[in-house]
Image 1 (cartoon, rainbow, N blue to C red):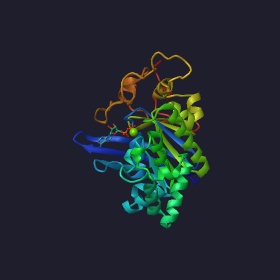
Image 2 (spheres, rainbow, N blue to C red):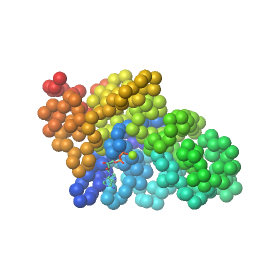
Image 3 (cartoon, rainbow, N blue to C red):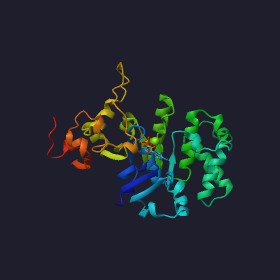
Image 4 (cartoon, rainbow, N blue to C red):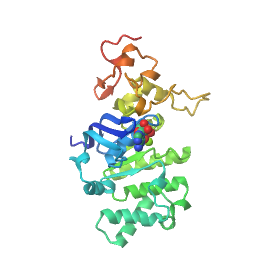
Length: 328
Ligand SMILES: Nc1ncnc2c1ncn2[C@@H]1O[C@H](COP(=O)(O)OP(=O)(O)O)[C@@H](O)[C@H]1O
Ligand SMILES: [Mg+2]
């Protein structure tokens, strides 16, 4: 569809090691609409990063391998592109920022040199023009005294400033799609909300589409137009954000929403979902969430539900919302 910048269809990426085949991304399908923000939410280990690293062509390969599906970006299937063309798309077409800026910033180069390098790699401009663009980007992400930061190395900056510098670098070639993997998880709450509003402002200003990965439903509520909820490598629920919060349906989604800390009330303890995400080498036989699900029946313990639409644009992977449900 021409409205979508990205279409992921039935994507499967598995790791192959001594445990056998581990399905880290398990029949995942979604699209990112142009100029919109798609949120990907789930606890740690649910496959959020691997899904986005598949889009970037940056998952560990081997032991990982895409074994099924397609990733259409501007009409091209990224799973079939030769490494050289994929390299061109990274940065210029799709850029990514990570939880820990030091993983993508070079500790021994100045911020300015790193941003310039990205620009020079992708665009036919002179050094002077690249320098001017780099300074504009540093300015755009709300860093005071751009000239000073331009000449600083990453370790001389605070965590929040480093994150801004990484965003400046990611956006320096005006990518169509920006993937943010837990961009604020390592930051304290005030800086966190500044970075989120920065991402929103730049998205509107530059028309960039965004894929935002987080474990925090509060961040999703604030940022995303549409949401996919992942659990153990699968999408368990997918809907527009307003719909998801109005009618959360999968018991996992309900649990994640209940776990949002409420700032204005005294919460004794967070409402966490008991249990933990299964390891890929010991996935349950039936529904992957069944061992933690308060509604699980015999059927849930032995059969895997497909994802199915419960209302237009809202799909859920749960037997409870399919005909023939016999639990309470
Ligand atoms: N190199 C690897 N070999 C085997 N399994 C891996 C490897 N890297 C990640 N995984 C597994 O892939 C799954 C998804 O991980 P990830 O996408 O990083 O989760 P998330 O970003 O949601 O926290 C996890 O179960 C993790 O243990
Ligand atoms: Mg991750």
